[in-house]
Amino acid sequence: MKTCVAIGILVSQWLVAVQATVRVMVTNVTYPTQLASFGPTIDDYGFLGYLHYPMESVYGCEVLSSPPAGEWIALVTRGKCSFLTKIRNMQQSGASAVIVGDRQANAWLSMDSHYDTSDIHIPSMFVPQHVLLSLLTTQQNLHRPLLVLLNSDETTRHPWHLVDSVFLLVTILPALIYICTWIYTRYYNISLSGQHDLEKSACLPDSKADPLLSNASAPLPSEKPALHSSSF
Image (cartoon, rainbow, N blue to C red; front, side):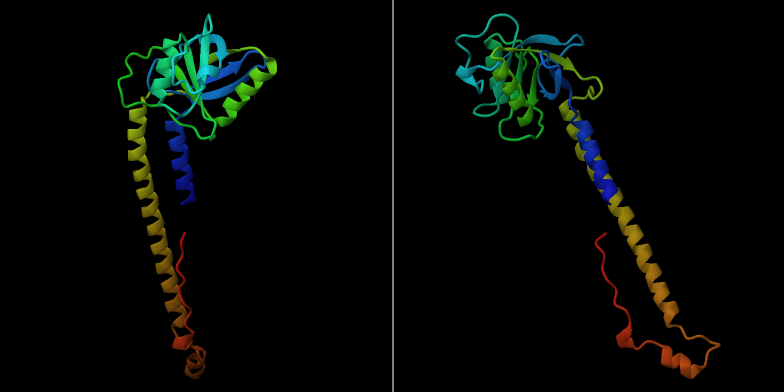
């Protein structure tokens, strides 16, 4: 049963794989990211730009009044407004890409939207808490914008859309759980049947033995070993 649970976890992690990376050029440290389910992906050549954390709109819920010049990548914090609103505002502010970081948790998630996203033409990605804090700390220590390289991660990237991945997830995992439950029940019934056979054979008197000794050694009904239920 533990093996089945482990397989299920691996399948779910594979279906929601990390799809891109961000590398800080000055430290040569690479961080994993999760691409949004809408908007374009990063091309094979990657994208090089300066990371900008907008103090006037740290959540990205407003269009910047004084955006930086040149090629820059917006780094905003999760919360206050939807992912689509953040990316749309940063796109209107002139950003070439958007990184959304979570200040509260280290959990991974895929940014999605139920609204029309056809106007989004810049890539965006999500990073958990430890990546966001590391990027902010590095930039603060250097006292200047970080030059970072956004790149696709071909080793973990798969071409399926998020909807396809979710569909496979909800169909494969129940089937896996059903198979594991059937195997476990089958094994348990066979073990229980074998235990009953052993008890019956232990209670049968030996035909070659003295009847008196046989009767004396036979277990009393109250001494019959009790069956214990197993949760495995």
